[in-house]
Image (cartoon, rainbow, N blue to C red):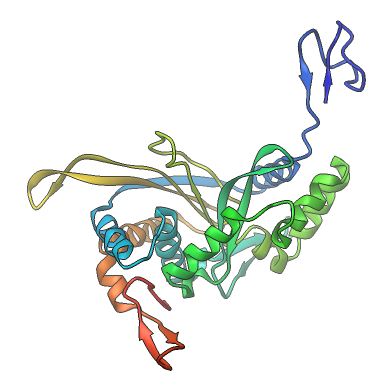
Length: 298
């Protein structure tokens, strides 16, 4: 870091700094720069959204909490979104090749969840990758998100690639990032096949973002507002869900089906949760037991 001390800038700033200005070497967020350059050059995104009545989800969360399970709203979105994408396999794809474009369809939904982290003293965006999320229950999804959320990005092996990219000179890091993403298998792990981002910790109702995948889900805060149910006006907790899709991969009709599927699943979470319960081994009893909060295989 160099502080400008005159009109010609401080030492090491190349004359960029002026009086009172600070020039900060932006190494910690270079991975975000490379991703945005890649995504905005490659994707052709269209956004749609809807408002979801979260009454059933809130009831499900309260019941789960009373039984010792704590689930974030993001986990519910990942759970519902990954199943909706799995039911529309065209959406679990990526377009590769510029001169000879072709679609690569992935066998599993790998959901990338954006996280607000601190690396080397800088606030950065990193991602938790929940592999095969369409086959996981809420507990497993929540566990993976929490592990990445609470882990140290300076030491976790999952963030080793980011640390390496940020240390490289920018031209080399940019070239390496693009080169790696030419391999479909690597792309499906580096970028995921479904992206989820949430800004609900602040008074953000809605936003649009492209996560480098065919489908990106963006959610804002959950808040109470008037809601018509059964012909009567009541107050309900609602959340706006934005779906941004790559129009080169899927069309609006499929995107609308996915968004409608997510809305239906969240608004009727008890019906889906009760029907999908994978066995969990009870080591003490030596028998399988089932949790009504786990969800299960699609």
